[in-house]
Image (cartoon, rainbow, N blue to C red):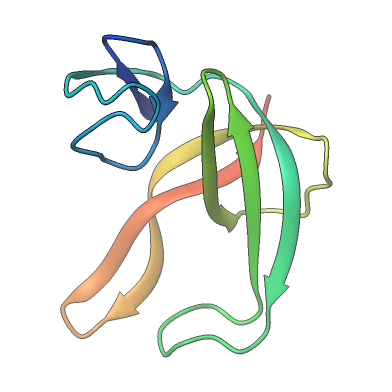
Length: 108
């Protein structure tokens, strides 16, 4: 399971690496399981950069502790669906090789 970063001082969670917590300014984070989130929004991008799938379905999901994550969707999902993050997926192909990251999938 993919992990989030949790501030040691206030417990706020984020997926994206930060030097300081956006809530309290703390500088120490621990990796914690992301758990199950809720899909808040979906969109489809039809014109994409070279190497990115077209069309490209994206979703915004909220996870426990205040973490919101934007990522590619692996399947047709609807707003309100329970979702989870799956890591180490190929997102696009670059001149330096594949760029990897997380995707949002249905929670099992």
